[in-house]
Amino acid sequence: MTLKIGTHKIGEGRVFVIAEIGNNHNGCFERAIQLVDLAVEMGADCVKFQMRNLEEVYRQRSLRKDGEDLGTEYVLDLLRRFELSVEEHRKLSLHCKQKRILYLCTPWDASSVEVLEELGVLAYKVASADLTNLPLIEKLCDTGKPLILSTGMSPRKEVQITVEFLNKKKAQFILLHCNSTYPAPLHDIQLKWMQQLHQMHDLVGYSGHERGIAVTLAAVALGACVVERHFTLDRTMEGPDHAASLDHSEFKRLIEGVREIEQALGDGQERQVSQGEMINRENLGKSLVAATSLSKGTVITAQHIKVRSPGQGLSPQYYEKLLGCTLHHDINEEDFFYLSDLNDKRIEPKNYSFQRPWGVPVRYHDFQEYQERIQPDIFEFHLSYSDMDLDVAKYLEKTYSSGFVVHAPELFSGSRLMDLAAQDDSYRLQSVQETQRVIDITRDLKRYFPKTKRPMIVANIGGFTMDEPLPASAIQGYYERFAKSLTELDMEGVELIPQTMAILRYRTAHANPMHQ
Image (tube, rainbow, N blue to C red):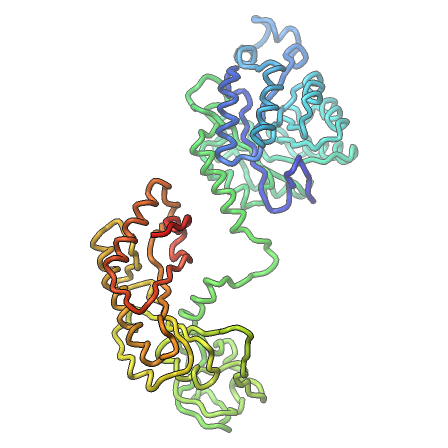
């Protein structure tokens, strides 16, 4: 089930984030504008306010200074001082439209619904206090607009009655789990109650009043399609909601976390092995290999098999299926068994032909086999730091008609990343020295591949960060250090090709290429 509010399709992947300003502007229109602008900057989908006609919300006795208990008297005093005018709400609505953020408002009475209808709101939020107010909810249903209802303060029976009423009215709505305490103690939140709400209705979210962002993020993991948190400039300001609100930096971290969780959740339909896992599966996994050299026609027994890394061959899960199979080819000790060894038909390499040049990545040790079997147009020698100490002549024995490219190691000895733009000059100079070794090896390889006039070297050159993108002010310095490194390299006869695939999470030094 999905529900649409403006351009937002709720219930399908992306969580709808509401920045609840409420009355945290404390009656100051300029502060309300400031809060809207900050909500836009931090990536909220919606800002929400509140509107009340006190004469209609409270009985007359309550409105007298001596009419009710201290709690009601305190709340009324704040509301009188902090309510914005209808005209100010109109201006806020227009400002939100200009800023391309959704303006929503919680009406606490029928008169406020009529005002908000004139303002053209696209949906309504119902406060927990009005979940049982069926006359008000009926008026909201009559607008035909979607409703978002908080369920704080209500037991199951009350929620069920309202859900049945909404279904009877054929309303579009979302239920928000909520604990209406400001701030809410963690042990009272009962986040798993969301699962019960899901049994009553498909669209369920979370409205939080706790401190911090952890519980709200957990709600997203539990399937919340909407999250709502109060938003303030300063938690020490006067008013009941500030203490249970998030400031700008906290709310920004919340939204970042929500978006990360969305990516991490997936669709739950299938366990897909990721590209990174495939690489580690090959490096760390295990395979069935020959325990000794075996001849064609051998019937495989347990004595012929052992389990070894890497995971490039037949999975050990096929151990029992491999027993009793007849080999259709000779196999050397510790060669991999493959799926084809389970079948009568042997899979052989095919002769490929393409309309444009094509190639394969190779290491020194497997070059000859690839050369004999498939003969591509280009070989890319992907070097490791240990390859740089090998004697090339032991692996290449003549001149070849193919072209070649060299891929420099990402890691050098000591697990140090190549970084020709490093801020640490000693680190940068070490990267220069190691890169020069790659250049020298490339020149040496050229004698085996005479058709390649100016061999290219693919290299990660630096400018990557682990936790967050580089600030814009730092990027120029990275370009300058990289340019300096280039002047210190002897690149006679070769061409360095910077690779933009980040080794770490962020590569921002080269997000805006400049000619050096």
